[in-house]
Length: 117
Image: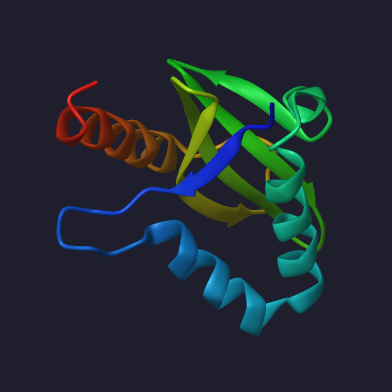
């Protein structure tokens, strides 16, 4: 059985990862295609480890793509083989900035609270 990759939506219907991907599609189509392919690969358990994916703590994982800028999509697992993507970033360094990690954690908590998980 494959995993299902879903996008987090805020209470008012905004989808931050989809918005991030829309911007990436315009600014860097090559990286956009690579990240989209990476998200598709996450449906298969064998890609839930490095080099494509890495645990970053507190239940969060990152989908990693190295290009002109490092592109990351942060996500977490939920029951029934589901993956929820919560945040997308681009940066020059290897580390995820604390504010971006906190944003992902806040969205994960919000999703779980609204879904009563």
